[in-house]
View 1 (cartoon, rainbow, N blue to C red):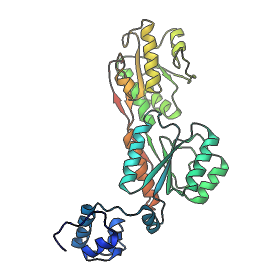
View 2: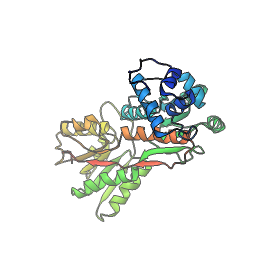
View 3: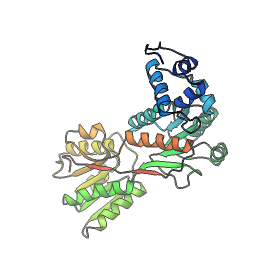
Length: 333
């Protein structure tokens, strides 16, 4: 091979001639088909060097035809601005991009009929796999269609009770999340704790933590629709007699709103009221009293969902991925 630097914007045929190999060999290196074409390590290295030097980018249409894929994965999010969805999307995009695929993101907006239209659209575009992040519900007709199409599915942030056959999930260990929050409050000496708006698995973790302390009184309060004048649970807490000395609120934004209103009413945090949230969002860190929270891996959940989806697309057996939450202690407790 000549030592002269090859020109940019070359074709696959030109790269094959420079490397002294066939186009099939170049294609095998490009598409990482290790077993279909046997190449000596030095030959593979020569092709890879040329590909880097020329910054060769294959035609997406041609590559899709070779691989018999659309090179497009779908993501149905409820809201792209919701909580840590932006960071999760970055994780999905980074993994997909590394595998030469694009990401088509659409929103369900918590409307079952819209979710169904979105799923139909993603199937019509022949996406190679779909990430549901999360899904409000699924009609029997859509379920049957997804099963018929055999489209690989990954549930992100949740795991439904009746998942699609072959589907997998990426989520946080919510039992551990509940344990971490209430254990922290109990260790701080609180014995009367209100937990506001927690889903079943987090409740399970809360109860496990409470069982270890005989005199602990931990109450589960149902979620209220947020109102402009008060966050969920605030009026109930103010009217309680005796008042819980600590509250664990679902979501940092609602926990911050709860804390801010308590401060306006003259309560001192954490002396009169300790408060802990979930998600470790910027409002918790930047609050007047920096708020203790439970951090969920944001980027990592998206990255792992994409990795899991591509493994399913490649026919690799995979289990669900359950990630660990972490306590982020600050001044609110």
